[in-house]
Image (cartoon, rainbow, N blue to C red; front, side, top):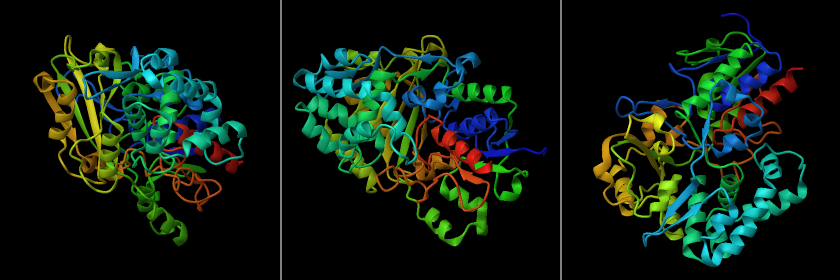
Length: 472
């Protein structure tokens, strides 16, 4: 191979973000991708039938719109177009009604009955502080630039989501709504810090929206790749890195892999203490995912659900709380909290004319091979009677199969490791610079580094900045 200033292993959002940041700084960059296609968690494929375009992993992207890295890029010039559903989120209830999160805080609050005022005050404050919150909390540990915001938000964010929901809201509907937001943490809602996930996702819904990429999440990867190539970067696919010898010489080498893969690649080169820390890194529950080819839209009993790109199924705080606790403690729950997206209601390009796709997943124990299809579909039918009659074809991934598809999803963990208080800012190890390793010129830039999972590119952005500082 030709000589390069920097080599990046992996073409997920963080690997591409690292490569772009290095190329912007004038580095000659090479990205190596093990699979035939680039993208990591940003891939779109015909998983069920020809013409039905399904997102393999991530599908809804509020963090991309909020990310300082993504906001700095001219990706619209490379064909990336965001689709904004009329409502960001629907949360159907057991009585056949639903609550919605719309972009407008006031419009959302107006539907929340006795919780309207407290919800509006809470979300108005968060939306106003959005830029500061993103800067402080979606970053590695640093000297606070907005200490008052950090202190105020931190007091709320450190609470367990279940306790916060009960304290802040009086109605079961809004408690369940908040629980559904917080359950994106993929942790028991009794754990400290889980309220942060609900607060940030609610803030993002009102500040930037929960959009879809027109044509599928693979379009994000396509746009990032096109921009990188315009900067002079190179990408080689079908190039699995099994050891350090598989890489060409370069001053900077970044790895968009989790600690487990990094240990395998490095072998005995790692100092024993650092290696032990990586080997003790904790991975969380997995997911069971179903992609559907549908003959018609999901027939929600609450018609408002058809306005939302995302639907959370779990009628109450107690139900969602039990489901998340079960997954974390190793039990495949009977009534799973289920996340559903319905892209073709708003982006008809992803299915043949008049037909639709759906996307659903629930959280399951780490490395589970349990088939959750029946339980997920029972949950969907509960809120959308007749759903099974719409199913033309389905494709499933259990947690272990997701890891086989993408080794970064260890045990099916799509967050790159548990994101609790022990591992949120100290992932993957306790170091002043979480991206650097004890070996000069080698850096980690995956979701196993701060700020963790999601399509935001910030792990790669911060890792590349660290590498550039240290290479001067």
